[in-house]
Image (tube, rainbow over all chains, first blue to last red; front, side, top):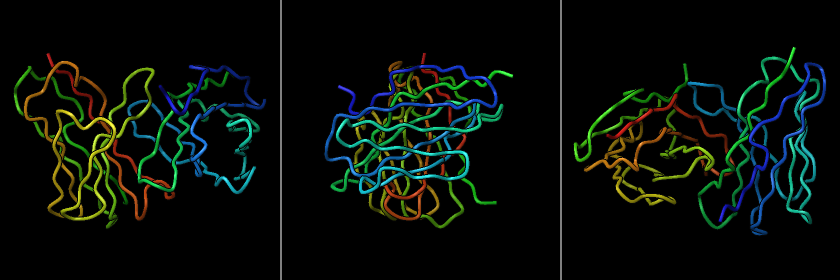
Length: 112
Length: 114
């Protein structure tokens, strides 16, 4: 059973609009969450993270929101740009081990 | 340039033929990991290493071996590959506890076992 779920395999958004990528988790012990971005034929690259003591973290066009009661986090990209077209992975961890648990990824397509 | 390199990038092999995928990082990172990526499953950790001579199993270690004799290198060994090990493999490194620090990933190795 997957502890981190990204239920949308793909998402298409118009350039300049907001992209919202969602991630749900089941393990209430998770205390740190990260988003990674992956282009074809490349490894994932770190995008943004959030600790469970916060409910929002912002970095330029990227904002991650955490709703602990709903066990849900989302990544907002505003405004969306063509270079944002990639696969986005959500990952989570708890303090008791050194492992990240990854979602299956969401492919974001930015349309011109 | 700070980077993680993997070789080979692509490999087609046959069942049972031992192979090694190399991984090297030039950032003096303590932590290194191997992941496999399969459709619909995201990345799953195979093995990780917290420092030289310190390795531990991840979520899916069966059929794999690793070693960490030097800080910069973390090879992945498949002693007797099987078709279910056909996958996209990534090596990653980070400066401290991987879960709270950015991991740097290699470009990936696409392995096909016939």
